[in-house]
Image 1 (cartoon, one colour):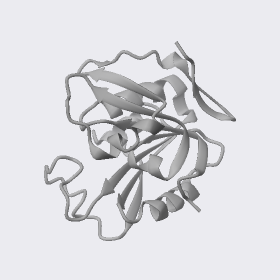
Image 2: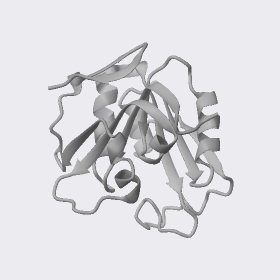
Image 3: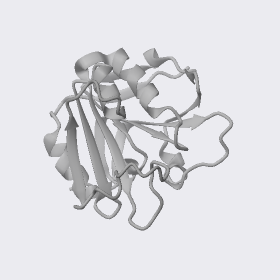
Image 4: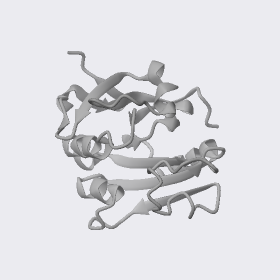
Length: 189
């Protein structure tokens, strides 16, 4: 059962304090560092009756979800979508979990059944940290952005590292990250 005490040391979670903080670019660099050893998961939590997590662009992500959750595996390396870019960067497999906020635990259980055991996972999400204890949880903070989204504020005390990003990327040494059978870790500077 998934609950706040579920320990998943092979999960590296990348969250952000605001939209457009560079999660996909940051994740692509991690994938390039660790190559085809990674499974990547992008999680979009949808709150009915609230604004779209993608900025109300009318993309259909929220309105098209007719069930509590939906899991798709990306197989198209050329579409230009974030999931496609992650696959193109060299990930072994890429999944997208779209889930209503009242079904995150159920969606996560279903997702875990589809993942290969023993394979490290890179996960883009803040909300998932409410349900698991990952090996590492890194939040990205865009320089000069004042607003912090609620999901990030609620989890700042569980964050292992906050990395500042700019439109040019992040000043971060990706060789500080390591993953073993015991899980993800980060070398102190």
